[in-house]
Structures are given as C-alpha cells and as structure tokens.
Amino acid sequence: MGPAEQARIVLLTAGWCHWCSVFDAEVLRSPAVRAALHDSAQPLVADVDRQPAWLDLPGVTGLPTLALFDADARLIGLRSGALPTETVLTMLRVPASGRAGHGGADDRGRLVSWPTWTLTADEARRQLNVLEGELFIRVNDADGGFATPARRPHPAALWALVRWHAAGGPDRALRWVDLTLDSALRGESPRLVGRAPPLPALTASALAAGSADLMAGGRGWPERAHPLSTLDPFRGLRDPVEHGLYRYAEGPGWYHPHFERLAADNLAWVAVARARGRASDAIGIEYFVRDTLGRPDGSVAAHQRADPFYARLTAAERRAVPRPAVTALCTTADQARAARVWSHACTSLIDGFDGRWPGTAWRDTSRSPAPPDAVGELLLALAGCPDGGPAARVLADVVVARWQAGVLPGPWAAARLNPLVDGLCAASAEHCGPALAALEFVPFDLRYPPPLAALQTWIRRAEAPSEEASDE
Image (cartoon, rainbow, N blue to C red; front, side):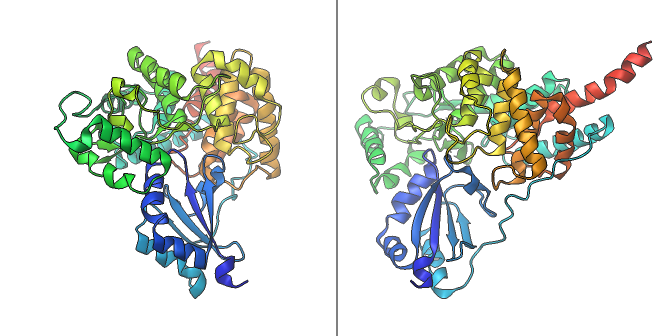
C-alpha cells in the first residue's frame, strides 16, 4: 500500500452546522472531489459533538474543517471553513507529493500542572482585572454585543458575567449583558411579518420543498438557500415562532443567522434572561428547549439541524411540514446545564453520576471521555442541586486526583480548564485555591469563559478575616 492510499483526511463536522451541510452538498459531493478522495486519501468523518477532542487540533478555527494526516498519523494539512473545490483538491494532492500543508505540532494534552500553592486576595484581584479586560476586548472584537450589536454573542460568557455580579462583581457587568440582550433577543423577517415580496422562492410550497431537500441530503438545496438572505433578510437571532435563539448571524447589519440552535446556548439564554428580569423572553426560550429538544426521559437533545427554509415559515405553515431533525445525542454538559436552569432536572443528574469521570455522551463512559469543560459544567450543576453536594465533592476529588497525577483524559486544549476550575471552586473550597492558581497558565478562549465569580468569591473569603478584625 503506497503513501497516497495510507493517508487519512478527516472531516470535522457537526449535525447542527449550517456551513457543514453546504460544504457537503456543494463541494464534497462534487464529482472532482469524490474522485480525488477515492484516489488519494481515505476519508473519515468526525462528529465533534460526540468526539470533542477533534476541535482541539492546532489550527481549527471553526466548522467544517478538513484535517489531513500522513501514514504515521501526523497532521500535515488543516483548513477550516466551507472551502472551495479547488482548495480541497489542492489539499488532497499533499499525500501524493509528500509536501506538507498547513499543519503544525499537536499541542493538545499539554495541560497545566496542578499547582502546589493558592492565590492571595491581591493575586486573585489582579487575575480578575486581566480577565475582565480580555473578555471585554474579545467579545467586542467578535461583534459579541458589549460595545457592538450582538451578531456573534456568547451566552455562556453572559451567564458568567451575571454570576460574577451576583458574587459581588461590578454593576458594569450587568450593563454589558443588557446591551447584548437588547440586540440579540430580536428576530423577524419581512415574510414572517407579512411584508414579503410576491416571489416564487418565498412561497410556502417552495420553502417546504427546500426544507425537504435539505433533510433528504440533496445536492441542490444550497443554490435555493443562498438568495434567501437577500430576498427575505432575517434580522436578529431569535425565532419569533418557536422562540429559540440561533447561534450567530453572518451578514452586515446583523442579518442572516445560520439558524443553528444548540441546547447549551439556549439554556444559557434562559438563565441570563431570567436574571435580567426578562421573564417573557426566558419563558419563550425555555418553551423551545422543552418542546423541541426535550426528550420523554427528561433529558435534552444537544441540537437541532439548521434549516434556512423552515425558519421563514409561519406557525401555521410549519404545522404542515416536518420539523428540522433533532439529534439523538444527549451530552453530559447539556444535562448538567439543564439542571443548573431547572431544579427538577437535578434528580436524574445525581442518579446518573456513578462516581467516575463522565463520558461526553450522557450516561456513557465507555467511549469518548467528557472534556474538562463539560466536567466543570457537571461540577457546577451538582454543587448547585439541593442534594448534589456529596456527588459534587466526590467528582471534585476524582478530578483533582487525575490532575495531580497528570492523567486527565484527553488530549485537550488547556483553555477547557477554565470551566473546570469554575466547577471545582463551586464543589470544593479545599480545591479552589490551587485550581484558581492554575489560571495564570490557562489561555483565554471565549468558548470557555473564565471563572469570574469564583475569583470574586475567593477574594471576599480571603479578605473576610481582616475585615472582621478591623471591625473589632
């Protein structure tokens, strides 16, 4: 078997990903790419929801991503985005030519060692100031909603800000949250408000046909979907019919969301809207999660497939067509987040914890281990459940024992430690100090918000004795 036959090209994708579906239909199924894949590499598909470690390959900036490995499993090429056909064909020539593409050393798994010291109040305050500044800059650089409209908001970061304020953080944190909510909790298109131009592409039958073609995996649906952003510009991130929020919008003026709806995002939106007194918004989003993503056993499905045709149908029109597919996957992180939002979900969460490091999929430890950020989410949930304290402390001990021994399941990007530190502090005062000390060596990543509330609480506790002494 020659080098070309032994090469592997891996498509990183997810069931909710709009551009992944477009890339599959327009590029991967083209005759030229199919022939090149057959001749030069053995294609594999990695679902990053089930195997999240793939997202931590160096150079991954989004989905879809093509990663090329040589016969020795070395990464020799990687490109993210809905690539044009010629770019994919160029990547596929790498194995035959022996030339390396855009690759790099795999730095996953180089996690921070467990610290042997704890933070002082002054050190924690300095760390908090640095993280606050970084968060503000990164969010606005990505049009996330603090000083810019919320084209690409980060609901988990908003939740972290709400919790920070509740722990004693500044009022400005809530002002940032409110600015984001003002622009994110919108959602309308001319068609949905009855002002659509009388065009064949916008009839209910045309949209229903496009949705059916997308669900069937046809190749022609992207060609019909692309003009919709111009013919019927959707503004905002909220579905005015079913109330769930889409992940982000792409177009100028914050139009044209990708209609990707994830459980994790929408559960965070519920918590943030509740905290900011937007009860009707919270109830609507909660209804979407329960009605669309909820399962009979009380668990929550991870996501719903993006569908730009279905999103433009009215409530009456939607009743006549199938809903976009909902995944069968239930993740540990999503069940934990649901328990943080709904106390009634605590019972099944506690019952499902068996004292071991959890799996990515809920109640499945036999396959992919849960990433550190998901374990942090579970720690936060267990610690917040009325009867979850003992389970939270058991899991915290498991995490710290593995971290101290340098055997955290992985490999993972170090930024995933941010939510893990947050969870450890919620579950165990004993482990909080060293965990917070590790933050100095953990990179910032908006996908994994820093533990602002934990740092604020640590400062308050560290200063409490001196405050009491001064009162005397």
